Image (tube, rainbow, N blue to C red; front, side, top):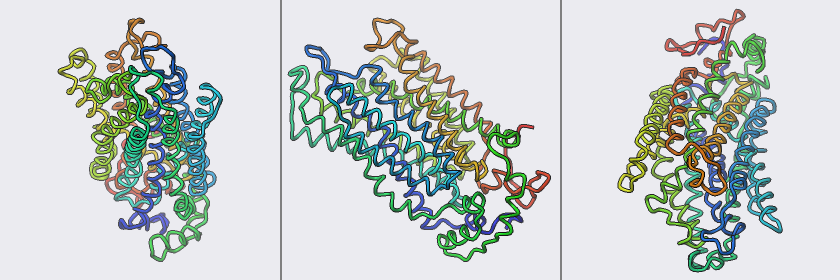
Length: 542
């Protein structure tokens, strides 16, 4: 055992994979399942909201949300998520992971139900209340990012820690899948019960009054998995690393982990006191010492997550074109309102099944074999290659005969996002920072990613508009076009490759080795703390 390593932490590091690991993955993962369901289910019902609340008599096409309303409805949850990541990340280091974990879940349950109950006398008031509740839903979801990652990393052993954290994140894929499947079921049931003609046959009759229940039910069901998980989250003990290293309660940490691991663990209160006095355990987030030790690491985690999410969330730009091109979604006027929900949900479910879900689980399978650095570098590399492969011969892909090729390359781009930086940017910040700052630094990294998501989802929505003003979508100014937007995204992915070199490899190392919390008075890491394979890749700022 390492000289200065607490027995309770060493016991966690060398523990064999056992039932409590899988329990922790399910409890933390169900939060991410809910997060993904809640964040992505709005895209299933935005067309329906347009038909119900923005119908124009005599219009050739069904009603749609105006650009500013669409941006607000889709984007307000991102703003809430960004705020929640920063706030709950900080709170998780101040109050403890477990206490804050329950708060985020209850906020998600309440806001999910309230979103479905959005009320008002007119379209503007319904959209305003929906946006208000979606913001607070996002705020709760934001807290789940740093807390789930930190809890899982602090519960895991050294050997399979990457796979366990990635498995929690991979539950996002199942959340997206569940959202699509549930929307298909609800749309099918309503379509069978309340059949209606297509919009071009009867504009008013194509949207039955009962359609207003469809979007509300889809949004409210997001509360169920979160509510079912609450009891189990409250039963989880606080992580030993927080209890021992931050709260300085050696006896409680040993007692909690003795029950979890079912072994006798010595409390070692004197060693906890000795560790607390070390200079490595005294500096704060805004200190020169933090910048010297972890400045480049934080720059690496924030920049790569920011760049990844710009590319990842820009996929919304091309989905409607792709779905239409391969016939998954026919022109809106040829369908009634509920049939359109069914078609959109089916398309999203197929994309999740074929591209999103497999990528996540490839990461789970390989992250502890080839390492975080290699997977992230490979992911960004292939995303760059495929974005340029779409962009440079873009006119070739627009021909009807070549559209299947476009879909295949598009799907591969997002397969390598998920078997790549989309997973690793979540894993690494939970492993490389000190225990007392771990949740905060993960929250900062995640918030940087969500800022990238806002740029990707909304900045590129305007940027990708046709250069000819007469050919832009209704209400949008002229942009640089889809081809040029794809070229820019390719460049962004290349920058991701560059900034990945700032991120250290954490495969097979304990959290204390990575954060350098066990150092002597001279700031040197004790030799007994480092395995012969230790390599932190990046040199701290001097």
